[in-house]
Length: 78
Image (cartoon, one colour):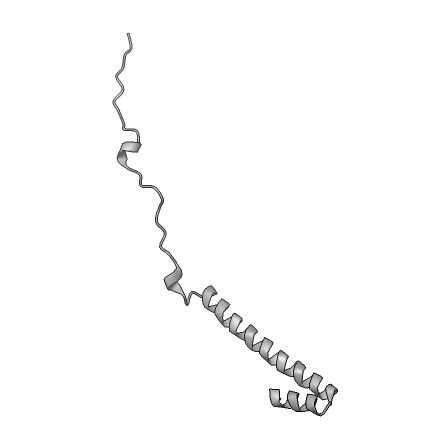
């Protein structure tokens, strides 16, 4: 079915046929759009777009200065 069939049905005032052609045309377009979205989502889920994934980097750097140093404890027993 094509748009020409729809137009010819409307011009001939065969509205039942026009309705069926219109429904089929819309169903095909919706199905095509859904198929495209499925392909897009599958690509995102299965990692075909790896360039968009950022490497993990810690937000803060920890230096040795932040950690307490081991100090020798003097024994002050009398």
